Length: 338
Image (cartoon, rainbow, N blue to C red; front, side, top):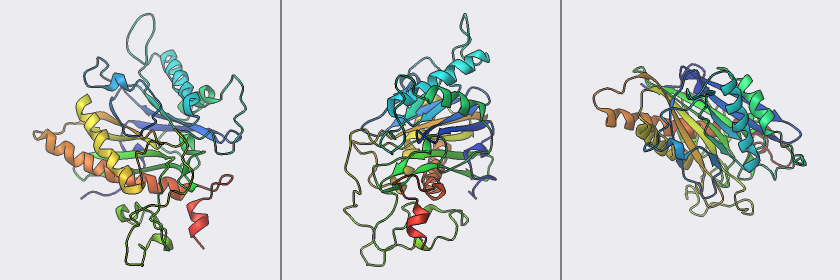
């Protein structure tokens, strides 16, 4: 029986730590995913306007076998500096590939666009992201904040405030899966219509979303609109939902990539439309390698991928539900809990 993990956070996967840091004036932030030992990492990019670092190295055909951290950041291209700072800090700790004259960490990263959320972006030639990366790395632990936190601090989901969300699943047979998503989508996270239910509502586990009066589907007999209301003008590269799914399974790089591919289905269940030309939607998959898949690896991987997709959808909902109003971006709870 699959059920949420003890914390219902990605850190229910043993050996995965999360650190957040944010700049309130800038309305942006950084999240660091830190495995306690090098982990197998795969990636899948589905959006039309991605911003990433070191994703080619994760290709199964490439030499690099493991990664030492993953960084999710706001700030568009400026946010990639957070990964530079994390790599430097890890190297100073002796963490990374054992090359001379010093350790060389592998730190893939993805960024989202939050430059238009009203925060102070007049940083001149000194963007805050390197400092935020160091702060987030130092804060890495098993318990962390959701909503307006880390890479989700300044995120916007359609017409609502987005945020950082997480969820986990205990598969009941020793396998654990978790997801961490920074929800900053062009598409909507609600169904529209009179109820404006969360798209992810059908994937709720054990009442985790709470008593939400808005979670009834539309009563107009039409179901979800076939033409979703695109609530804001499209700006090139002005969105992007990014995240990580993690498992304690031992996976190859190719299997980790397949896990990331399957996990994207969770974004499609929770956001509509998704993977648009305006988003850079990117998901990493991290495997800590504690538990073997068994004799039928393809079937076991298929099950993990299905569970990961559900975790992603649930994490999107938690990110939106935990978010609080920031500037003109109103929180879901404020808009629909009346």
